[in-house]
Length: 353
Image 1: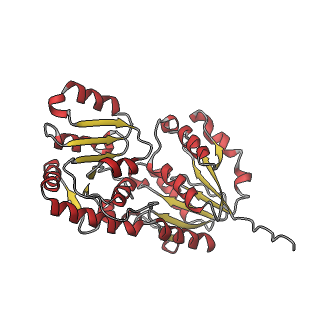
Image 2: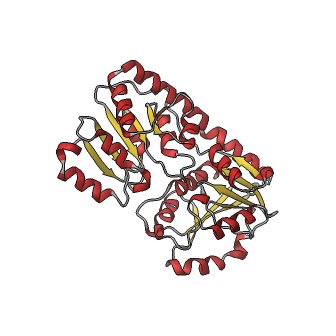
Image 3: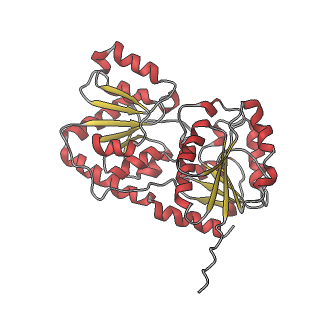
């Protein structure tokens, strides 16, 4: 009996190219780049995916996953030139997904995947170029990672509504039960240690207290934070700056009691670390923004000042019933962002493109 022919998988090229960005050499990858790797894992069974990127660390991690890559890791002044050499090759893919604000109108089945509020950090000419790009017939969908991000764009300028979709970022696993209360109470923070992530708000809120805080992440403020702890142990002795942690979810599952999300950055659209912490089944606290309200929901724990943040943390530590209630709430809320649901949303638009 003859063997059945294997059906060829549709091909996807996901591009995330920064022509003039010092992050191409950064020792960390951002949330958007992390989601590209997760999208590869989510869809690789049914699609043949190639990743085009200009960041050294991202390319290394992609190869570790076994992903096919096109490297544009060159000196900043050469990235655009090298990209131009791939135009004809890009057109051979079935789908072209762009992960940043580049207006690349070169493929008949283009999907713009929007992870950040470009209007908050792009120049007016860049914004105008991107808006014109979204109106091209080649752009089939503009996929926003949250409702607040979509609303922000639609309120500021015209984007074809018939192309707009919301597909949230997702989590791979959800614990079966919330994490039980423990006297060994530890607070976790996950992200890149830099000013716009507002990590110092948590540090300042708990300085001089006996609450243990673990900061998981590297970044430009890491050395400063470490020196702060060493030079003022009476104020920051319970604060631990752990640097890059490969698996923060497993770390929180084993060590953490509470998670705090501090970023106030306007470009925060869908805080993945917040969703990941919820999936562990621990109470989660966030600075109140449209994005964090979208993730945590109406019954989430929110603060506006560092005094409020400190008060919430101490209440969770002293009130076991409150702790258990909010841990259970996190786990239930996390189910809205589980991968199986999100995968169906992506497959739906790819099949209709």
